Image (tube, rainbow, N blue to C red; front, side):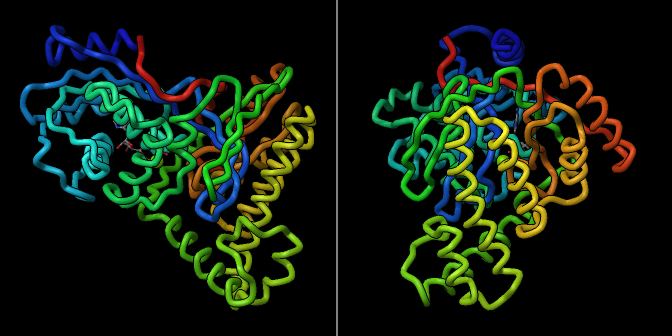
Length: 389
Ligand code: ADP
Ligand code: MG
């Protein structure tokens, strides 16, 4: 993959000089959905698929971008004097947003770049290709300018800052954190209230992670994502009138039941319930994994989906079809939607010997009901972003 990106770079921009390569993975969240902006826990892992970048510093302030995934657009030319927040109108908004974020955070970007990207994760599908592009750009900038005081967690925070402010997507910290901090064969148990984290080995013994991509485009910015966030903020403010908490993630199920009537609107009450219960499920799921109780882990995944479908209402017919068909397949330990929802992907844990049947059966049922095909990826958990040697 790295060689293909370098070959493409040489063809477009010439192969001479100090051309360096970088990689940032995509991520999948195993459990803990819509908890990261509610001060709760998440449990994502980095994948071995992601975004490759080849880059070379320029002497001037020009930027030349090319993505092998967006061939039709060709080389996009721009400069460090043309930051157009929320108005780039194409994919270069993500690498440019990260350059802008570095400048805002006191790490000037004073020289331009020639850049080629290639991603082998589906983009716009909920595996966080956007955070992958931001993070690979951050790793590149840190390396090129020798900004050694910037930690990987800082890169994650700058990525979130750029996605929030430059690209207008009000995402939490989960995606960038998983991508920057991922570790092979481990998921990250992250407390989003204080960024304390712990690596938990994912030993699935005879099973693997299968991602089913609905191919329904999500469009986070104009979806109901921001609406869910504000529903939770309002619910929190209502609870704060009767109980001293900073986030919904602080509440146990019992504490929530005791104060829930402070939330005036029944729909908003369901949203807050999901945030509280999902956080507790995530804590329990990690304990189950540590105890090698994969069956329990799977049950909690299933319960997570039900809550996202019925209380948080972020699934839709496509994700529900994928998950409900998965639940009926032999060898499925657990299955749920993953990511923001409203389209995107599901994550399932499937016994290795049943994976072919799973893909055939879920794939056929999905096509029949929805009218177009889903894509399936059997994935491995990989390391976080870094320089490629
Ligand atoms: P997700 O992050 O879930 O994949 P988003 O809609 O947030 O979905 O981000 C997808 C966008 O990220 C793409 O439309 C594109 O602008 C950018 N992107 C992702 N991967 C690449 C890539 N390999 N090359 C160029 N742009 C990319
Ligand atoms: Mg994204």
